[in-house]
Length: 596
Ligand code: PEP
Ligand code: MG
Image 1: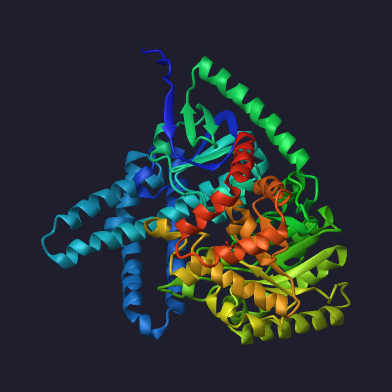
Image 2 (image 1 turned 45 degrees about the vertical axis):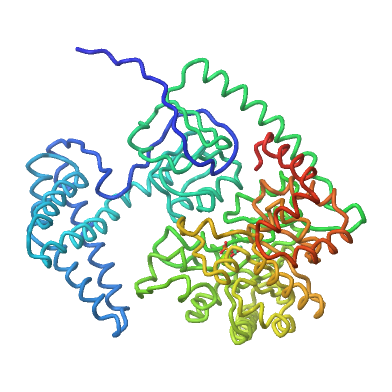
């Protein structure tokens, strides 16, 4: 009998998704399709339940396909035919029957039995010479992934049940899964996929949870309960660290914490330029729990509350009361400060499991955000009612995403009035006088900004999408990520147009896209006359510090010079020449403190 070998220290390098260091035990959420399934044996009396689990997963996959088919428009008949063939495959003896047989005969878990069946079928079809039959291998994989999703769906529910302090290790986490986790138990994140703009990163950063992403094979190399160190600043994970590595890491951790606390303390001051212009530096949040970080980092309010997370990871739309409670939670924590609640921005990259089904070749250009809400006025009105009710307790604004034409804002106002009238009728307490703002994310709103400014109370610029739609760069596509920059001259010119229109019409213009947190951009944004910047909470201290070192009149003149430049490189070198030393000093400080 061999005793357990001493484990060797393994150093893995990935992308730093959220700064800071933590040391703890790994908790594996291993679900990356059929290829990462583990095998385990089951006692004879557990087999029936396991077969039923598989049958239920097949049934759910079948229901899902039926729903999708019912919503597929006529012009997508070809797509529908593929789905119909998937429906048939679901009950195919070779797939369904064989998996049941393996569970029973080999006494193994359903996931493993499915994987074994699929591997065999895939090999069989791929080795066929007929191209049509060969191509069936792809359908087999797709069908099995759909079943697997439902099988591992149970595991996803487990994510919500974690009740010990752990470091979560997963192949990937969807926004739906992230929103299920009780984040107070999570010390750190390690994932195989995802980048700095993934939702895991965004949430981890705002909750100050260290995260390292992009560690291929993370779920294969790291085992449950392994001791690991996650250094989100360096983008490094150490598995089974030696005593010396552990000691070094805990020293580094204490240093970080002391610096971070100092930075947060210093951030309680107002963000005022050297010539006395006051800016509000606000926090972006996705979950109510994140408000605490905004306060810790000295935020002046919530500039963007992305509400879609409450709609994810569930089987049906949240009720008005549920939403009201969540919004009120946020408002109660900061009753005197602005809380900007953005209405549902669904589809695009975040789809609802219980309502999708309409096939969209280009989701980013499809039935997203306000377009979706206007298609489903009852869903929209429920949210508007919840917002107006929560607004009784504080300083709430409504922000509408993805507006591309005037009719959409007019229809929104109409629905707001209807929602208010229905609340009145129901005798429920609400606040009807909320500032209504629109997100500037689509170039058509920039072109018409002058007209839009007469319809709303404020603008908030969403640069993440504005850059995507104006530069034709898919914000989630790695292959074109090198083209994506906040400093591209066309982007700067668009922002200048928006600000001029807002100033001319005397409405405030805010920014809540990632550009607001980019230290290199702060002088330009002040020069534009933007007086409220909203960002990931961790970035607040650094941006506040920069603001306090700038003169707004000088920034305005500098902005005009930047607008003359022809490339992002030229813009950047001009910024560095003028402000480089000051920016480097503050950024280095922020890095040492582990906030950026
Ligand atoms: C944006 O597009 O800049 C924005 C803030 O919205 P989101 O990132 O949620 O699309
Ligand atoms: Mg957006």
